[in-house]
Length: 210
Length: 292
Ligand SMILES: [Zn+2]
Image 1: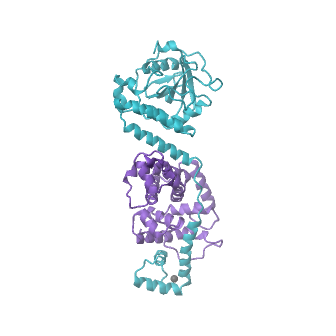
Image 2 (image 1 turned 45 degrees about the vertical axis):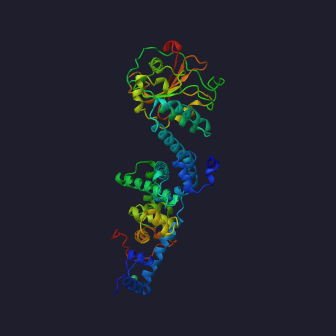
Image 3 (image 1 turned 30 degrees about the horizontal axis):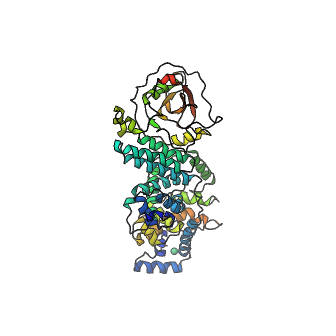
């Protein structure tokens, strides 16, 4: 029984997860404590909305809790958790798209009202809340481009890390990022500097190959 | 005239994803075209803008919410893996009693308590309760001002095993006392129960395979209601309640049965899923018969 005396706090992630699968009731909570801030950072950037991100995070930790026995030892626990969080976010993004794009709560209504006052989304010249603009713009991307950009550009992960999380080749991550950036450009160019953007060639943000 | 390079191609160029031939020709154009090289800079600014987006911090309470959800899941799994085998109920019983004691945080300690109760649930036949027409007139005993009951604080060893049922009863304001009395009578023995094994021989045990799901919020609501009162319900019926004159349709409600202070009779409180108190009543010992 001397393993029991090892404080779970001092064990590496993989051993903590193993403890959990062996029935240690403290173990999973320790993993949550270690990773929840980072996982929140992922979820809030993918989803933009704190309510949605909170729900996604809870879903994710629950499915990690249930699926811990499926963890394959060759990945890092944090990579595995990232995957689960991203999947949980992805599920919510899909559900949001299935629902009609009608605001269903006051928060959304407020956001829409502000946006229409400022005219930010269709006409990127007004000064507006950058975070809101970015999320409105990210909403226009295919999910795979958005996820790649969240990991690489927003969170600063190396392409290889993002590739492991997303379970695709590094080149795929790069091309998703590249296409995503080109799509975002027309919506974000007003955030680059105070001056209105120059009259550039009409950007082909339409993603001809997505 | 040479056409400009589209933005996507520029973005791919920046990532080094163009094929050699295309890369050379695009590079050649960009090096001589201010507009396209500006666009290339603009693309790198997209990355900068994305990196600078502030994100709200993790909301207050989310960590606790996740912990609660995980705890509930753990208890649910424990309950599912122990499907009421009479040989095991003793162990499950003591585990159920032991878990809450180790929880320090507020509402959390109620969660395992309730889920442990659900594991040993016995279901009263739907519609079995009969309205006896007894009208409650005694005011409910107010909690909070009197000394702690004999059952002790929440961390004391549980002298009883609470039960969660879904009787299907539609409680009414006028009939509450009698309906609750029926519920209690059907559920006897409550305080004398040592837990599930008391019912192991009863026919109700067949319902063990489908225990009513304890709605989320019951435990925190009970905790909220209890205030300084250390009492906890001995019986919880997930049912419905029609507060009005009989015209109103019954709404989802939880009927919480507490042992009355002094150990004589029961206090009944009805709450909505929003944890609003919708009604209350008392049940005299005589209403539930000689009992134990
Ligand atoms: Zn050009």
